[in-house]
Structures are given as C-alpha cells and as structure tokens.
Length: 216
Image (cartoon, rainbow, N blue to C red; front, side, top):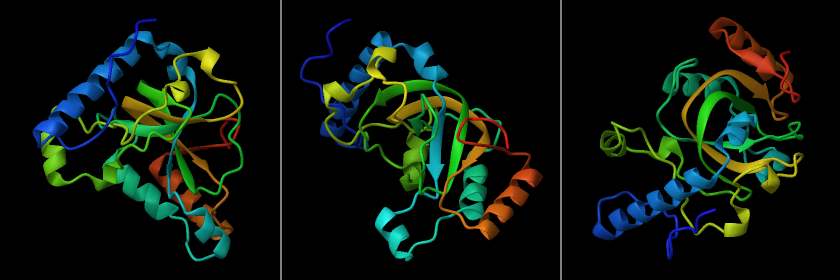
C-alpha cells in the first residue's frame, strides 16, 4: 500500500477562499489515494442504506419528535428520482450482516454506487439538503461532493474485508453515481404511518425490504 499524502487532513469547505481551495485540493488527494488502495469491488458488494427521517434518540424517547415517514420518502423521491443514476455523493451506512434494531424511520437501499470513502466512524460530511443554489451551480458538472468536516482517524479508515468484522455496521460509506429502488422500514413508525408508507410505495413501485435484505 502506498503511503498517504503527507500532512493532509481531509476537510470540507466551500472553495471560495484560497485556504478553502487548498483544503479541497488536499482532500481530493486523500480520496484519490484511498481509491488506489481500497478494495472497491468488496465495498460495492456490501449492502448500504441511506437513512431518511433520521430522528433524535432523546426526543424519540421523550415522545417530542415524530419521524418523517411518507413525507420524507416523497421528498427524497422528488430530489433523487427512483431508478435514475445520481451524481451527488451520498452518505450511507454499510451492513455486512443483518440490519440491527433502529429508531430511524425509512432507509433508502442503494442498488448501485461507487464507493468514494469508508470509515468505521461518522465522517461528519455535509448534508445534501443544506446545499444552496450557489453550491449546486458550482458543482453542476460533477454533482455535490461529500467531504469529512474534521480530521479522520487513520485507524477508522476501511479499505477491505480485513477491516470489517462482518457483523457490525460500517458507520459511513460515501457513494457516487448511485441509484435506488427499494426501502427498509425502521422501528420508528406507527402502524398508521407504515400503512401510508406501504400505500405510497405500491403506487410509486418502490419495493420494501426486511432486515435480511429480502422482499416483504
């Protein structure tokens, strides 16, 4: 394995200032180095989910926050149409094994996608919904990137199967050129919301998958 670029810390900032442009350039060097050394085919083979309707655990326990079910899925489908290849890089959680119990509402299961980075820690990448019109215009040719907002612990970086225990989820795998057609229902929705979601999925021809990645 080649040595990583010396003195480079992956960081994300809008490339408007000279310092931000230098940080973006350095971050690209790190990701290029990772691409050369990672087992991309193995990481492509791992089932991945992008969670929408992500809810705060404390608020969920207190009952002060409701998960977004149908509304969240409708919005996601408007922004990222089912079955179409997307150019904006997306954050996902990798599942080498079964999906453990979760308080999240709806998971978008990635059908295809090219891994751009993987880590056992949350990379704290920017949320796509936070992008402005100016951001999208700047990245119109390539799609919005996903870049860590803080230093990445080298120990947490995942390259291949030797870095994965096969049971626990991989905290973050960012993917480019991805598509989707299926969802997973988490444990946060009530019966009425689940029925609404199932009805919407039937009309939109979206498949629903269980925690063993089998159709239900």
